[in-house]
Length: 349
Image 1 (cartoon, rainbow, N blue to C red):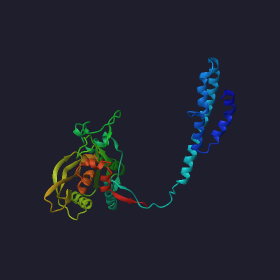
Image 2 (cartoon, rainbow, N blue to C red; image 1 turned 90 degrees about the horizontal axis):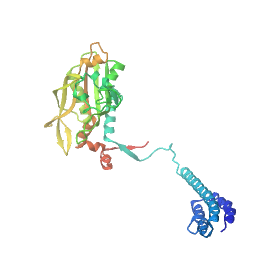
Image 3 (cartoon, one colour; image 1 turned 180 degrees about the horizontal axis):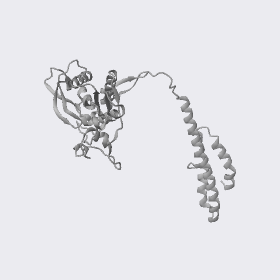
Image 4 (cartoon, rainbow, N blue to C red; image 1 turned 45 degrees about the vertical axis):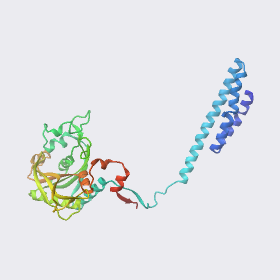
């Protein structure tokens, strides 16, 4: 086909491309023009029979025709695809105002435990608070009476942020207690629930990120260790859903409490699960606790005579004990079988 004929038919082909109403129609035009035996393909093949001077002139004209047709076909293909998507959106529109029915996933065991604990304390009139996970040395260490030389302040224990002086990922939610006393003063009854970070290697019993619940009760009237013991027994009874618990205190050391104690609880094992019972034949460490150190109150600007106790539980460990989970890594495993086994179904509505 001569170049003049091709130029004469160019507008006809462009019109055909623009009027193509489907991908199939457009593909047919593309094959007719650029297929193995297409008009444009054959025109390029015929250049071999032209002289050198003709090849230059005809070749330029053919390339102009080819580029115009390819651009038109590409543009029409995009329009057809956009129209198809629009049609799909219209036909598959979901009315979000309709009520949901059936099951829609489930809650992770850590989320279940966190919500239960939060609701438990809210029902008792406690404040349930959280604060920033990126903290300063003051809130994470200084205000909690942790001296500069303490091992916990070294990089082998704590994640520090490069380029930011004395800025770190909090190692405990006790920072929230400091912030709360500075902002709200005393008396105060609160718990802080949230994520904490320590420079630990991930293994069956350790994780560089874990969850804590820390309680703080400060009054202007005297509080004793007996009040602390009663509070801890009440929480353990709630969490493990048992009526009676048997506990004991062991002397320990924490810079922010004095005296400091660790609490053990009687238990027995059944089918791999820990059963909290006053008749248990073993003792299990449950938490750290103690009477708030006077230096902590001073750091918060509290100069009057006050009395307080504090304690902290690891939520991940509580969940493992209650559910018979042996490896903390299971709590962060995306295996659906594990999640389905321990989750709580959520129904829409």
